[in-house]
Length: 415
Image 1 (cartoon, rainbow, N blue to C red):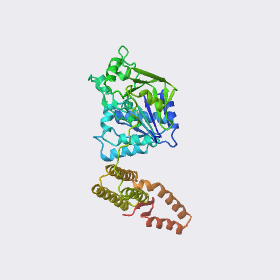
Image 2 (cartoon, rainbow, N blue to C red):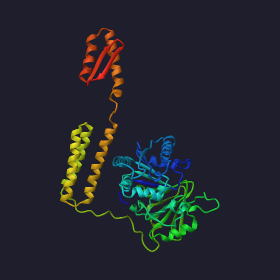
Image 3 (cartoon, rainbow, N blue to C red):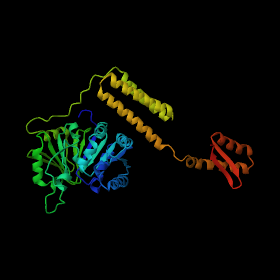
């Protein structure tokens, strides 16, 4: 966990309720302003009310927290165009605060695992950002994920699906179970995310010995603050750690160090495996490749700022040629993947810049020209013909033709 500066906040449910306002406020206040917050909509992407969930979250953040909430639209990896997918990735890469909520954990995983999203989430946390996962999204964080819909709704035998293992990257081998104290069943046991006690015991026996269960009550949050090196519990319920037959419970306001937390979840048969080691990479090639990529990226950003369209395109072509040439000259896969990611990022930036360009030039010009023509009319009324003509001639040089008519002046762009 060395070098990690961010936060993972895991909510058992109630992510947009009164009880969680103070949690969101606490987390937002730990980030330097202005905070760029984003809502990732994948877990509920298959639901007909997916848009309503985002609207509800955006209104909650705006009214209760005074915080805008951008949407990272990624309902389905199969149905999105490459441009739409890259746009969602860029929204996440810009975000300091990423919020993901209810839906289906297995649906979310199906749409995330073969995309850059898991790596983006990891990088944003490493960079000091805050990732808030509630309900279904909380289920995805561990090494294994509980397929709630498949077991509780469809009736499949209990099993575990592979998870994101985002917590495993921080040396925390866990399976996360939100809705730990759920009581919706009334006459039947729906604790432990609708599994009930009997199924929970069976599921726990299926886990390898090094994986513990992190149970989080509804309207409760477990905040993993890697910068402070501690875990904080906030909310109306409790957080439970189950390791074999051992169970430890923490309530609102309690804190413990990350090292103490690691000891609690260490397998009974041996030491905790610790953080995952960084993946090995081959020795970097001579300075050439990465320096050229960095230089082309800087050139691109300067040229785009200066609105030099042809030069921007030429820079992208140079980067594309460099990547293909390097594929043949050395086999540093990780470095080439990063260069390709840079290339895709620049292409998306270009698309976003194009989207921002005015589509209706006359509508953009009209307010300014109406002011100029009003000034010109006053000059003509005062018989300041030379100044009035200077305005008309200047507009003509800029491509705007002014015609004086009985009903008043008319302007249009020069063909």
